[in-house]
Image 1 (cartoon, one colour):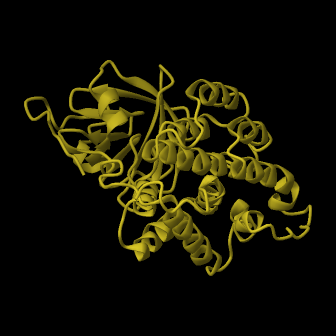
Image 2: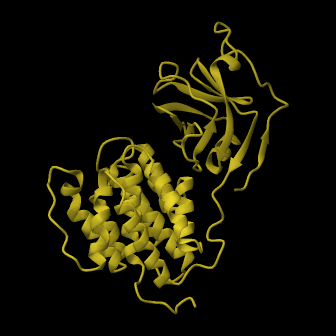
Image 3: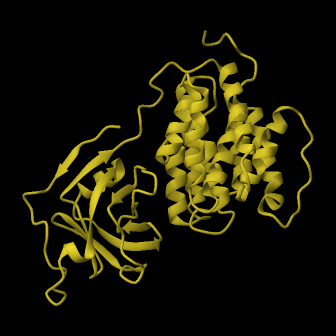
Length: 339
C-alpha cells in the first residue's frame, strides 16, 4: 500500500457549523483516516461542492456538482479509489439525501449538521498490479476451477451468485439445468449463458452484446446485473494486462458500452461499473485477482474471496459470478506459453 500524508494543520481545524448552531466539530463530526486516489484528487481541487446522493448504514454517498461520485465509509467497509474512510458517520436524521456539502478549509461540511475533519489522512492505493511474473495459463485455469469449487461449497448464494454452480459446466460441456423464471437467475439465465459462451470463444463483441441485457437488472443502488458485469470486465481487464496480446480488449468498445450503461442504471452503479472496466475495484477484489494470477500460494485466494462475498446484500456474489464467468476466457491446455 502506498500512502502520502495530507496535512492541513496550518488551517482551522475546529469551528462552529453556523453562527446559530454553536456546535463544534468534536460534537457533530468525524475524522478522515484514509482517502482513495480519486477522493484525494477531488479534495485537492477546490472549490468542491455537491449534494448527498444516498445515506446507508456505514456509507454516505456524495455527488459533486461536476457529477463526480465518492463516499465516506467506516473501516468495516473495503477501501476503493472513491472511498474516504472516516472514524464514524452520523445517524440518518443528521444527513439526508439532497442536502448540500462543501469543502471549507480543512473540513467537508455536510448540510448544517455534520463535518468531516480533513486535517490529516493517508492516501490509499491498491497493491502493485501483478508484481510477479504471471503463472502459465494452464495453471491459471486450474486455480480458477479451484476458486469455483471453493465458492460452490459455501451456503446460500445470492443474486446472480446462484449461477456460479453452472458457470464451469459450460467449459466442461455439461448440460445446464432449467431454472424457475421466478428467480433473478431464472429470468436472466439466457443472457448469463450467452455471456459465458462468448467468454469461451474469446469474443468481446458478443460479451458486450449479451451484457446489454444485464445492465440495470435488479433492485438497489448497484443492481445484480451491473455487479456481474463489473466483476467480468475487471477480470478481463486484469487478464489482458497480465498476458498482453492473448485476451481480447478494445477500449473504444468498452467505453461505448459504459456510456450506454449510464442511461440504464443508477449513477452509483455506473461509477462502479466504469471503475471496474478501468481496472479499479474494492481492495479485496484486487487482492483476489493478484493472488489468482501471480501468487505461489493457491490457498491465498480463499480469504479475499470470502471478503468479496461481504459486499452489500448480494453484490459480492454477483461480482464473483461475473469474475468466474470471465475466467472462461482462460485456455485450459497451454502449459508452455509462459515457461
